Image (cartoon, rainbow, N blue to C red; front, side):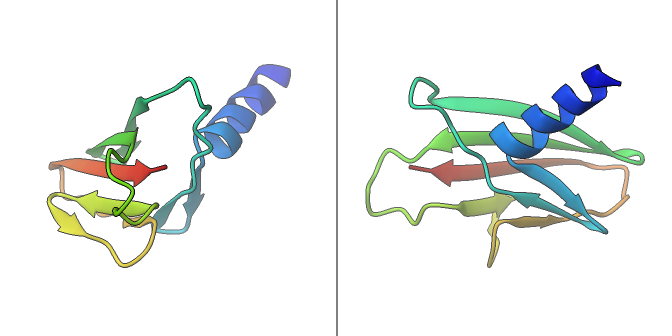
Amino acid sequence: GSAGWMYRLVVETLLGVRLEADLLRLSPRLPRAWESFKLHYRHRDTFYHITVKRAESASIQPGLVIVDGQEQTDATIRLVDDRQAHTVEMLVR
């Protein structure tokens, strides 16, 4: 019981990954000592390889999410089960 709650605390609060129907919403709280983290998320038979890292430039909009090279309009990933590997990058300050 308590291990499950600890897992949810870390994944949803610290890493900021929350499942909402067919969307994965990202709102990480990166500790100052961390430059980045990687997360491999499985949605049915499809894998999403997510990297969250600090933006090197102050001119980059925080919360920018790029899925398979395409900038997203918000900090969400539309989940599809196409059995392809997808690359996700999120830049934070």
